[in-house]
Length: 300
Ligand SMILES: Nc1ncnc2c1ncn2[C@@H]1O[C@H](COP(=O)(O)OP(=O)(O)O)[C@@H](O)[C@H]1O
Ligand SMILES: [Mg+2]
Image (cartoon, rainbow, N blue to C red; front, side, top):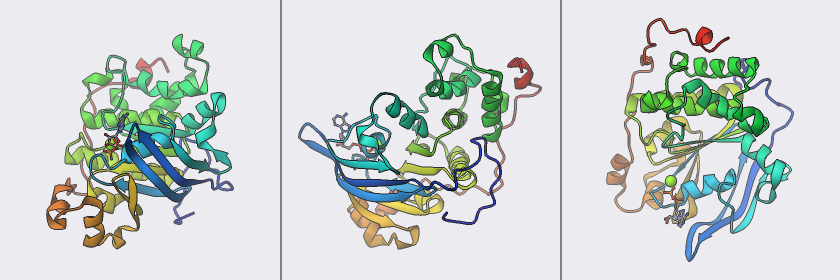
């Protein structure tokens, strides 16, 4: 593994230390009509890495992530995860892959009128039959697991509120809790903080880092902000016009490299691509609503 982290028992169960599956992308290309969104992308990612993908809007970042979890199919090229060729998975194997490979989005993609707990439990959908899920027959263990995930994200007090009533930062944490319910091997995040204020951006990025470090889950996150990628990611992949134009550690991201990724005047670009997450490290969490007892109310 990359670093000698002391491991705690994650909610995802014991880490599979013996298996170190690795992403291997080879010449991955996606065209939309005449437009080449992603052009011959090749790189490997070892299990457990925290990778930031940066680049201008339209560079191909979202398309690349969506190809990894098969929301979009590559036009050509190969995406392998360990022994499996992701791009040729079908049926049950594809569903298993999409379970192993959780994704969170800029706009959270929760069901706003459903309560937070149910939204989180929806992360179990791929683990069970649709009939049982529709009948709302989540097991006690699954409910406890969902509460545990919410506690881990510091939002257990919101369990019974409609998800749509939460702040953006809280909603993104619900989305992360839902992703954890999938017990994923990989967490893909497409601009997870682009709609958030700096405090909530920090809370969400800290949560992603914690999941990466404590659970050993590979995190691949698109970020349009350079400073966040520098602060949180051990590896940065820079894209421009569908191609990888930088792949290295934050320290290697020179102004020349930044210019290649973003083009134009690098001084201006650096400030343009900064969200300034300059929050004290012990930032207060959003406070719990007084007296709520989600465990009891959830029938546990
Ligand atoms: N479904 C689609 N149909 C047509 N063009 C698309 C589609 N998705 C993305 N594109 C185009 O592909 C390019 C890359 O888009 P995207 O992957 O969303 O970039 P980024 O996430 O870096 O902003 C853009 O030019 C975009 O307009
Ligand atoms: Mg995008």
